[in-house]
Structure formats: structure tokens, C-alpha cells
Amino acid sequence: MDLPKVWVLRGIKKGIVTSKFPSKGPTVDEQPQRSLPPIATPNADWAAGEKLCPTGAVQGSKKEIDSGKCIYCQRCATAGFAFEEDGAGRSRALQAQVVDSRIAELGKKQRAFGKSFHVLMIDVGSCNACNLEVLNLSNPYYDLNRLGIFFTNSPKHADALIVVGALNRAMVDVLKRTYESIPEPKFVVSAGACAISGGIFQGTESFVSPVQDVIPVDVVIPGCPPTPIQILEGLLLAMGKTKKEAVAV
Ligand code: SF4
Ligand code: SF4
Image (cartoon, rainbow, N blue to C red; front, side, top):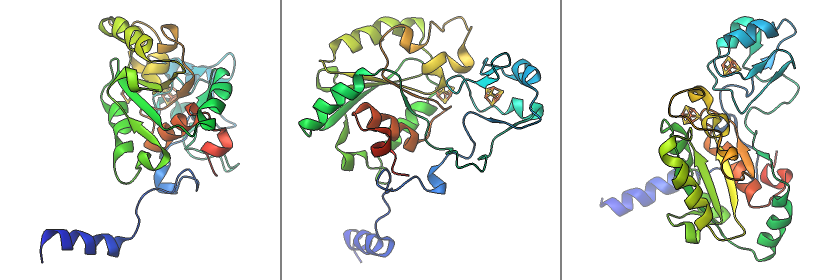
């Protein structure tokens, strides 16, 4: 049997494997294995958690965990923080947040024109994991083209910039110039703890600042790295979809 026939038969046998997200909520396999941020159990020792946390995500005085700083290292587990769903229906998968309200207005305009959405990714100092998770969206399983989202390599063609990695000195000007080269209306998505806060690289010699201190950010996607579905959710929010439209759970 020749190769094309084999592939056609294999396709018929397997059926459609593409993710149904967002028209159906993320499957268990599509969710991350741990909750973000970790959940404080009734026995949680906030002071001990703060001491153990390498990124300052556990804020003992406020009794809060900053999901933008959490790198999932699980060191706080010994202080009574848990990494499983809390049983109260809290989703482990969907954490992207709109941080700039202009998105609702601009997003409406985008939708009015039924426009496709072109995304340029820039890596300003990642370990490559966030980068790979973003690129995974192009594979046949996530198939972001089915949602009218496309990657582009040119800022002139981009509607959105997705930034990954801990911003290092050499990339500050590159980031600024790339942002300036994108025509309005434009959106910025900051993906992963490194881009949002510096993550594990905070305080290192080459780390400069969170991305939002250098260019305006519209959507943040916590995680280290975020999963492709979490990234997709962030891109849908950047397109002006409401949380409910972006996340049909
Ligand atoms: S998992 Fe690690 S980074 Fe996240 S809150 Fe716990 S100690 Fe901090
Ligand atoms: S957030 Fe985590 S996975 Fe992403 S670049 Fe930083 S260290 Fe790597």
C-alpha cells in the first residue's frame, strides 16, 4: 500500500483528534497537572511558605499567592500548600487575565470586521519551554488556524505580540522596537512567570524587569510554562472574546 493511502486510512481510523477547546471545556488531559497558584490548605503556614518560596509568590502578610510569580516548584508543599483541585470547582487550567480594559472596546471592533488575528511571538530570554508551548498551538491537535489565529514573523502584519521569557538587557530595545513596529490596534500578551515577573530569574544579573514595565500589556498568562490551552485562552481574550466565550466550560 502506498504512503498516501496509509495516511488516509489511519486518519479514518483515528477520527478527528483536534482539541474541541474552546467550544468544549478543556479535557482532563488538556489541563495542567497542578493547580496554579497552589491552594492554601486550612493548615497552611504562610510565614513558612513565604520563606520557602524562591520567587516571592507566597505573600504571607496578605495571605495571597501571586500566580504571576509562581514557578510550580512545589517547595511550599511542606508548609501546607496543595497542588490539586480544591473540590470547589476551581479550574486548574484557565488562568489568563485581561489586565487592560481597552481590550473590550478594541476587541469589539476586531469582531465587527470578523478579522483574522495574527500573532508575533518574541522570546526575550526564555528557557525555551514557554516558547515551545506557544509553538505547539500550530500542531494539528491544537490547530489554532481553525479559530482564525495565525502566527506571523512580521510586526507589520501582527495584531498581537506574545512575549515569553525573562527580559534581559540585550532584548529591551528589540522588544520596544518590535512593539512600536506593530500597527494599531495592537495587543500584548505576556506569557509565563518569567515574562510577567521575572520568575526564577528575578534578581539575576541580566534580568531587567517584568515586560509590563517596558511596554503596555493587555493579557497575562501565568504558568511555568503555561499549557497550550492556557495560552490559547489568553489569545482569545486578546482577540476581545469575553471570558465566557474564550472558555466554554
Ligand atoms: S510552587 Fe514554588 S513558586 Fe509557587 S508558590 Fe509554591 S514555593 Fe512559590
Ligand atoms: S516561565 Fe518557566 S518555562 Fe517559561 S521561560 Fe520562564 S522558566 Fe522557562
